[in-house]
Length: 301
Image (tube, rainbow, N blue to C red; front, side, top):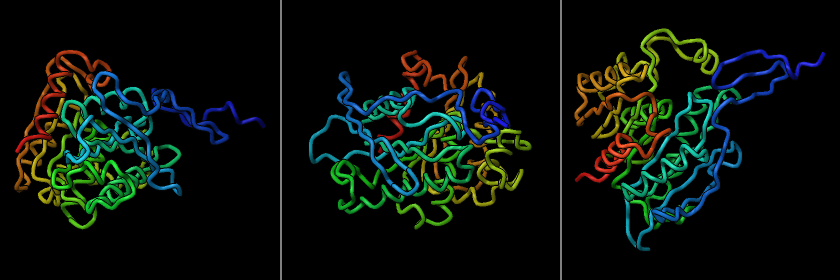
């Protein structure tokens, strides 16, 4: 029997799985090569972190002097844990614009995605990528851009949607065991974060079959007794008024503030906009305002 065209699982608009095991992604499959942006001068290149797993990243370096140290931004892309990459037009262009506006060195992580690689692999890959970056602290790591230009006293995490969820998980792990990441995370920006305030839906049950349920700290930070140990000193939460995840972002912000955590948390709400609007319309006034707010966060004293 030919199973190649028979659908076993269908999760529009993200992906479908056929009975022969083939996965068809419905969005986020286009890619751009690394380049030098002719307008901003930001350089980019791709590196392999683990040949065994395929873990990789795209690096972004602003046009700077040879000996200047810049803040290090570790960026985690969104896409429901299953679509998009750092190499897609949405994320290549956006992280490049952040690197230019904020004058930061950026590591945009290409974690393994569901459904071929079920959660929590995306978390494990992100942790491994951060540990790889941390290996450059003394200026003798495998990547020259990080050795020469990354200021490891000013390290930030950021991500949107599912990537914001992963970024939070990394900051939480850093707070529980400060040796785990190998880096001192100064601050974190989470944009339109994907948290779940009720029972996981069909997609999450499929791509994260070992999720512990309503108390899983990766998806229910409000119930996390270790939230007060969040491993950074600054958090900026970004929500959008028309986003279905808006209330979850606000809930996260309030939970962090009430947890007993000793850092400073702020929240920005963009009126009249929907989920990750800044990726789809990066030149609009509100997206540019958000970009400047993020840049200010990464460069505050």
